[in-house]
Length: 256
Image 1 (cartoon, rainbow, N blue to C red):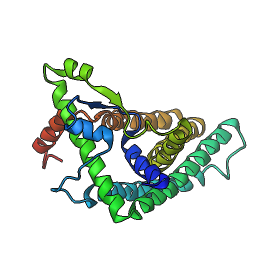
Image 2: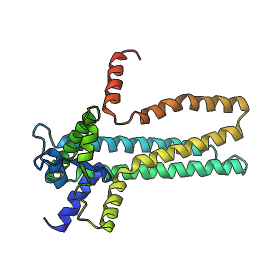
Image 3: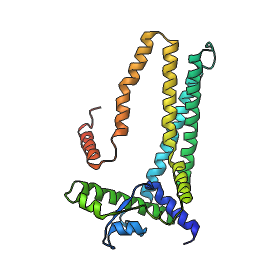
Image 4: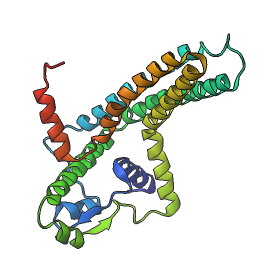
């Protein structure tokens, strides 16, 4: 395998998480040991399109959401760019609006580029992505199950942390791969920042240009929805918590 193929292989692995170290058991034939050596077997019961389709659909939805936010911010921005006195509050409002519009536009472009990058993977790379993602999910499930067992501490003490296939790469190569990976997965962060900028600009505009009852009402509307937005991001990846949420959702079917 030449150097270019090694970089591409390591880069695909890093899309999962370069900073997570796997616990490699002493048994050389174990799944953990194979994971550490990069000998990852593809799950015969899964299609290589499963993870790839999920990723591409996620980026497509993200691009649509970013475009939608751009349209909203453009419409809102039209209320402050003209017809208002040139005050500090108006300048601050326009600053946040324009910043949010720029971030959302960049998010939409990056989401399209990321989706296209994944779509252009070769068949071999698609199969490798499926194998790596499936193996990572299986090991994380095993680790989650181990966390509830009595042997957790001993198993963690026996394991040796090792980042997948990065021991042979120099620091500059690791930084380069990290930059590549972040470039693919950063659109969501830009969309969140752009939305925050829009909300801040909106509240500056409301409190500086509208009567106190209107300002209070708009502020309360945002405060009421904020805990639910935080809740979605706070669910996390804990299996037991997610399963409990799913069971709760099953009882809520039709309650809307």
